[in-house]
Every structure is written in structure tokens, then in C-alpha cells.
Length: 122
Image (cartoon, rainbow, N blue to C red; front, side, top):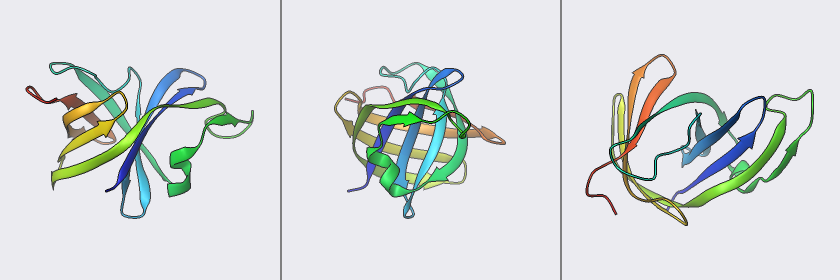
């Protein structure tokens, strides 16, 4: 089963990086306010460059002068199951230590997506 990770990233601005193992890379989004833990909350997720798979276990400091400089720690991780993926929409089930349940991401234009937990989801 593919894995996911949410990195808490203390860079220029504190944000969270949501990453899904997909197509032999980590598809990645910066989520300024974090992935919602409850249904009814929609959060902006901005697509960023794909990351190599081995980054899924990374925790540590990205040195000054490098892109994303700052402290990175794993906020949550686990497995996920992709339920559906069509143009501009993904539905998946997260089974992490903190986040569990059915989530959706909707592409709203350019690099912007909305991520939210679906009602009635674990």
C-alpha cells in the first residue's frame, strides 16, 4: 500500500507539506494551515515540485541558502488508499497515526487545490 507523510516545516513561514507516494515519486503540496483533522474544514494546498521517495522518512535541518531552509519534522505518516482520481479531483483514505479517514482534493486552478476531510469519514 502506498505511503503518505505530512512534514511540519519551519521555514520562512511555518507550514505543512503533504506528500503522497505516487508514480515512483512523492507528489507534494504545501498546506499553510495544515491538513484538516475534522470534516467541514477546507484548506488551501499549493502544489510544489515532486520529491524523491526517500524524502518520506526525512527529518532534520535544511541548511541556510538551500531551497526550503529550516527545520523539518514528521507530523504524521502512514498508508493511504487511492479511491478515485479524475481530472481535478482525488479521493483517498488516510491511515496515519493522527489522520484517519476519507479525504478529497479538488484542483481550483494553477497550483492551487483544496483539501478536506469528507463527512462521515473515520
